[in-house]
Length: 220
Image (cartoon, rainbow, N blue to C red; front, side, top):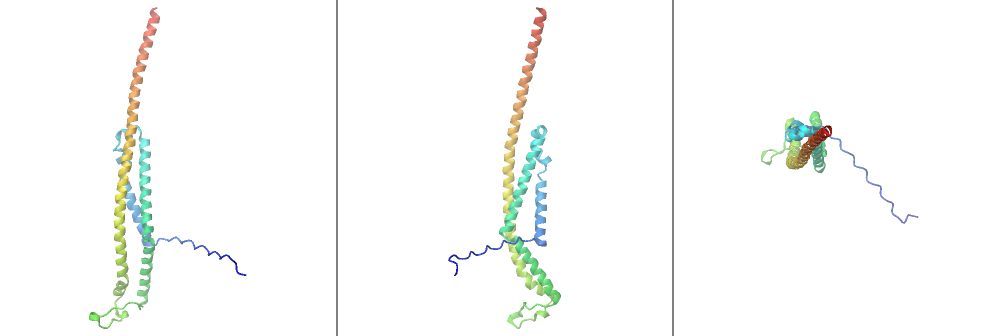
């Protein structure tokens, strides 16, 4: 007797993570190097030169603030880059380009290509594919792919430029926040200096009073 309840369908298989091919790996490497080069411009010497008072009085605290800022900016840039790669399926498309190029190389090596149909001028008889030179056959296959990839890369470049503007705004906000913190630290340091001056005056006054009392006792 069949069951009154439908059999639950099996869960969909988990997505297989994409392994970046040579071009995708190269893209990651170029981005990492560009990001490192950009962040290296925010060196501690250049950063501390903006806050000489704090750098001289509380260098360890300023180094910690600098390290935190650079780390947060790096993570922010990496997260944004990974999001762009995922949304635009960049790794998948670059891997597809690798496969197409490899297939074209294999066809060129075999000298077989049944998919190319080049018409003669004025709509005349077609030219047999095997009579075409290898560069023409390869170009017929790869030109549409290159055109598509060029459009995608242009869109990615625009997105990257937009992300760079966002990163610059984030750096500006971080700098303003650090400047507020530094001003607070400088105010605390100034308060401590004033407190030390008052304490020094009080100690001097107490010392004079003690000496005066001692003199009175000796004269009594």
